[in-house]
Length: 318
Image (cartoon, rainbow, N blue to C red; front, side, top):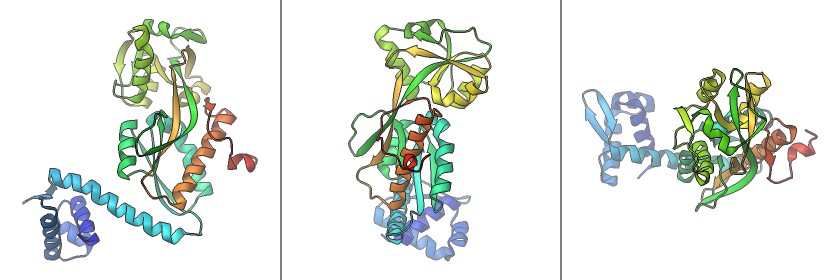
């Protein structure tokens, strides 16, 4: 199997036809067809379905495509790692955020990276923790900010902060005490993510020992839409305090503390222990640590810092 065969295969899958792929790849169509046929013969599976309308991936082709992308990405990482040895960090770094972390951390991390690591190009992905975990293990992500520090094979988790969950209400809702017991949630109309969402699982797990049944009037997967629903008075919701700080400061939402130690999430920086490192990956990991620590200590992210106390930002007086 040759690297050019992988490049041809990926190019053909993206183009949707051999004619278009040959033009994009600057290779004659018969030669392209021959290389793909040779690749299918070596793998022992048909990768494309051919028709008058072009080509489409088979199920085997879809599986092989994910692996082919990882192989080429690893090759690029290896090339970059050699080139950057002893120099400034540069190259691509793929980082994943859970959606609620993304609401708080994406812009500060992106801004700091542009200012401090101008030769590093971030690829930021927001997804459920389960997807982030899978993409870390497959090599599609270099690091991810996720919830939970339970040990997992193949992953290293660096604890950063504990994020408190709060009850979030629109300004038109009846005022609530600044702190309320977990049992009080049963009497409120709630808008929450679906049961497969990590945030919803924490909420349900916290309520289970009390046999507490919540009145969930709507399930919305988009956390931006969840906040807008609370702001419109459709229902209240439960979110990390940092993810609604902007709306609270603007007077569009208000929050109340839920008096339960279970209503908290631990944010960790997660990496794959089996993947090779790079100067850029290490630099981004340090930057993320420093940015989040500064946000917590400055109050921009209302949370409790539990990570490494050492910070480059602090040494710079920031």
